[in-house]
Image (cartoon, rainbow, N blue to C red; front, side, top):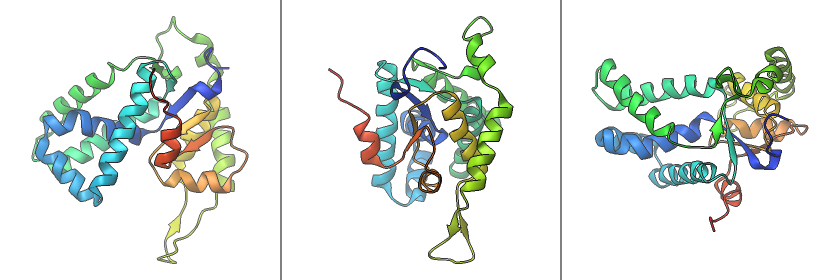
Length: 219
């Protein structure tokens, strides 16, 4: 087991959990016009704000040690790219100012406690975790899942394929490798993998009511 917490108290956090959280908690005040444009571009403002509230609750429960939060270094590579894309699309900031804004967002994120990445630990911490993280094993498992998850033709457009992206399959394999009971995401692409690959050892939690069930009220 990676770490001492049982799997049912370990959450692997997908990138979009952090995106919703930071857009709501940081960009709403740092770049209010961009925030409003982003919500409008999403198309369903109530759904967008609901997801942001749920993302904040997830991180709050991790911060309060109800769950251990686990993430991969890949998440931060994706997160930086998605924040850059959001700010390029919805602001006229130059790239220097965009990077300053993203640095502020990351600073807020690092205030959350009780979450970690086995890949990013200091050399004197969790060495056993890093030793157990064998990328060959992770990629072999990801290939297994991806091969079985053939997807389907889109119901509204028979020329479009619908299925789990390769990077998402890697996240699933990492969540299993990190002994997480849950993978929390708002990304609908993960649902295809959940539906088509029944032997996953991690539970993919996607729907709002599913996420809500995992978030008991604080005493």
